[in-house]
Length: 470
Image (tube, rainbow, N blue to C red):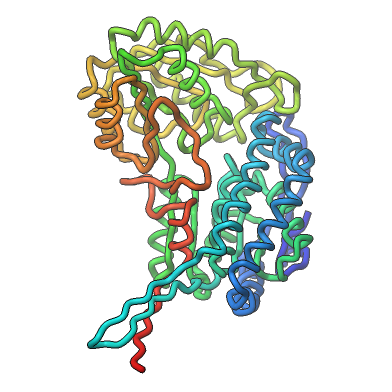
């Protein structure tokens, strides 16, 4: 496949290409251009030319294009989901849900397009004050490989609805489905240049987008180190920035919780997408009085997970997406073997693919350093605590603050969890779900800004004040 620039499919200016590999089989499933600074410049130029006509369209007309694209995506769900499995590795059921979720996001913002608003204030001293919300201009979206389709929707939907144009850079390991969706945007009538999709390494292509003086906003999803660099670099040209930088999401299981439901929630919340989700359950704090029974139920749920190629029937967990991720998970488990007990898993199966068994660990002290970092893979530590005070303190004892959950039947405990847990989103008796109506983002080092909901629309606009005296 080629890059989408200005409504046309183009190779990289350098002629170089990158292979896309199936993480379950190590087979090459496609090639894409390996773009650089020249390609980024061409995409930004195309987006710049398309901006004024697109921004001048009535918002409802922009929404109609998004809705038509959503219809085409739903019609092509089977093909798109199979492509997503091949490049990312997740089971077909999860890939299908993600593609449908992308369509849902577009439908949501298409609906919001009729309600974009400003403010009007009448004053005696100054006349009428009107506050308009104007689109920013050319925006850059940099998306990761773990949820490439859904996160693309979180950036494209509000950006285009608000009247901006966009240059989107998918991760190098998962560009194929995003490019296929780009073609559907064109078929739905999106004007050339409004959405451009470029492929290439982050250190060249991504850097070129972040430094380009015409780009007015960068929305980046990825890890903390890169996110800090994006923020520092974007500040040089006063760009707007949204950063979602991962999390170490805690799950607190109180002694009055429905343990069977909580165990199912922990297994689903951790091992979905092979644990490669920013808001996955990364650590469980369970009250000591019910810890033994909770572990028994969680072990049962974990052992029932079938691992394999995502296209195979009955598979519930695929491989990690890449070799580096697999190596990190192996290191994490080996580093804690001396102080913890591995209840389930703890090793890589034989054969091809970046597979690792779903793994449960117990026995770590509540202040173990490994509990404070993000573990991006199928490893779940279960830690005993005495009460809610200890659980909340441990949950907050990290630089991350993306998501958290508390499992209890007590309304007072639930309210305290919602109030005191340092996270951008807190679930009660559930974890992981983030519908497009929900503002999504973190506190502390998990990032700045929000995606989803009407809040995201605001972050793709800026206020313009008009003072009118008749």
